[in-house]
Length: 488
Image (cartoon, rainbow, N blue to C red):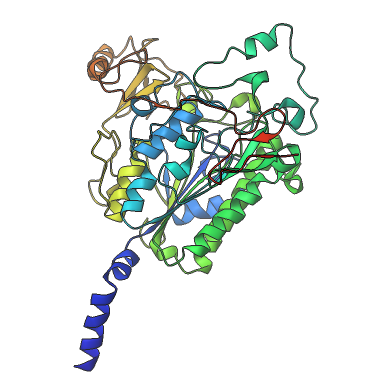
């Protein structure tokens, strides 16, 4: 009787703690520009033992879609929507952008935070660098990382060339062309020094030497976040700067792989993933932690990525530009050694994580689908029936089942038989062409077929007076601490 009374009292005093313990921890690792076959589980000969083990113990998602480039992909991941719906821009965001992900959009971090999660972001953000667009204004309790890509800094400080390469020499007329800036920010030669940000404050000017250490520093911060929040539940978003050009693996990894600097950096990424999984295991959290590994878009072939057997490169809507290597790991929940070819995408992580966390979904329209049943190998679980390939403002393709139609070129491919998109079957299968065009037609009245304006497109966030986080003379814009300072 006494024991029953004590147990009942404990339930009354700490219901939240008991409830939160049932919610899984969630870790989303997002690599920058990693090619479909840049890691062992998807065909690389490069040594990636930790990712090999992750795939062996988890599930590969072999038909998982991102967006062709960075900012749209991350917007989709954070909001559960097609990129154009929430970030209608022609390409990506740049330093001192006047626009960014609208603060009115409810991010995955905000959804989970409302469900009792501690939320942390470590790495490259790229959804706007002004204070109202940074992670700490979008639902994350903490942030540490670069606000955009590592090539968006000064050429003299290593942001425009690989280590050891000569600094790029501007071509005649390039300076003028590079200074044609617009509301998406400062481009080319007019870009400011590269800032490292922590919780809204610039703490460092990132030069070549600092770039070499960025992966290990992200990893240390990520492990620190996991340890600090081991009692859970927590959501860690770890969007690495690696393996975006310029390629800056730690010096101890340089020359270690058969795939050049990009392969060297992929090996360091593999080490980082091993560190994260080891930290989870050391704290005995593996039975209640889902870890997802993916890339923000396809690999850049000109910088050494391998997307085989897929066709195309980063920036394109051929499969090589938009289909990304993805692994889900959750021992005892996600069946080991499994694989799914169902159509899945980055916009699915918000509804999936919300379902697992028993969190309330945003009221705005979502395009993503809850994949929890698919990840847990529930009978009859499926992915998307239809997927739309947007590149910037333009709808370039549509997929249903194995069939993909490139609308602008009239090319039809059966991705089940021809993953490399090498055989155009449009003339042989006019019925499929017509079916897919019919599926694409309703998007005209939703996200539109081209151009920024359409009924389903939501407004961008806008900053009234956008400024670089670091000016050309090293002066730092006051952050959350309100302090202006100068960095060396």
